[in-house]
Amino acid sequence: MKKVLSILMMVVFAISAIAKDKGLAYDISGVSSGNDGTYMVKVYVYEKKPSDALLKAAAVHGVVFRGFSGTQSRVTQKALTQPDEEAQHADFFEAFFKEDGGCQNFAEVVVGSYETVKMKKGYKTGAIINVNRSALRKHLEQAGVIKKLGSIF
Image 1 (cartoon, rainbow, N blue to C red):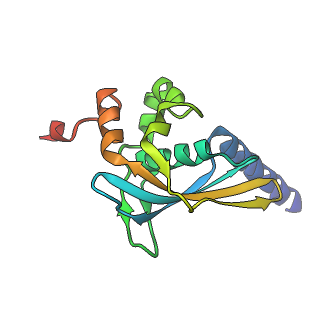
Image 2: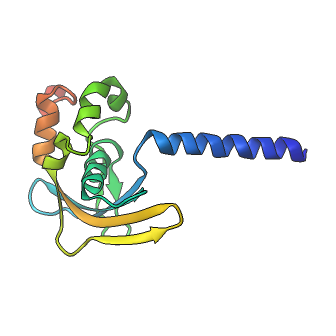
């Protein structure tokens, strides 16, 4: 029984390690709705070295694929698209989410909100990010990644 349990734990650990390596590890929560057409989100990225580009990419990724909610602010927003869209348009999103990719144009770090915590295996970097949802949605619609709002009717 102990062998089965230890093997099961190793498998779970291996799967979680593989899943973490495949994508960016981050947490996202809503801060406020921001100005018209923007979201203000708090993002924490877990990486080996801190980077503003990773914070921006995580914020945009969260808005597009995860959505977010805020326990204190009570700001909640559904994702712009379904998670399976990332696999369907892999070529577009691979280039879009690179460190110097197009996603950087839709996010801005709020001055004075940047924080970094040293952890055992890297850094936990956080900031409040202002994401231009309107421009982002328009860009994704023009690229054919998501459907226009009017196409439903």
